[in-house]
Amino acid sequence: MKAVLIIHNAAIGGEVNEVLASAGIKCYTKFPNTLGKGELSEPHLNTEVWPAINCGTLVVTDQSKAKDLMDNVRQMRKKLGQEGIKAFMWEIEDIT
Image (cartoon, rainbow, N blue to C red; front, side, top):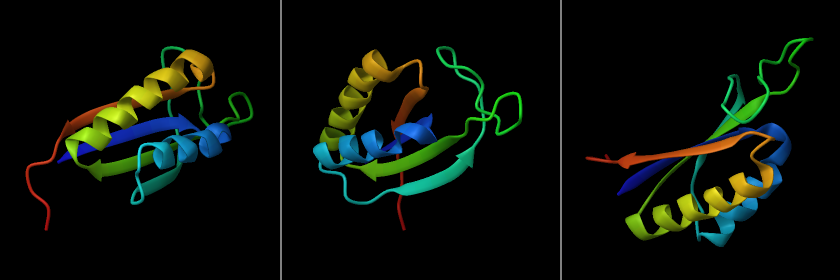
């Protein structure tokens, strides 16, 4: 099993949901109001100066779906990188 964490601008949440669906992902966890600064986007700090916010989406799935999801996020970064989106994938050792 693999875990994929997608950190993205809350404004593109609909597009992220479409990517999840296209990869066959039905189960996930959302972390709303996530703050941070990436390399391609402006800070998302929910302040008067930097009012944008991020969302985190965590998926645990099989390797094939995780690879598809990562590929889809790479395509999104080409189109929407300035909005702020990045994904991280790692191995899950145990689930209970």
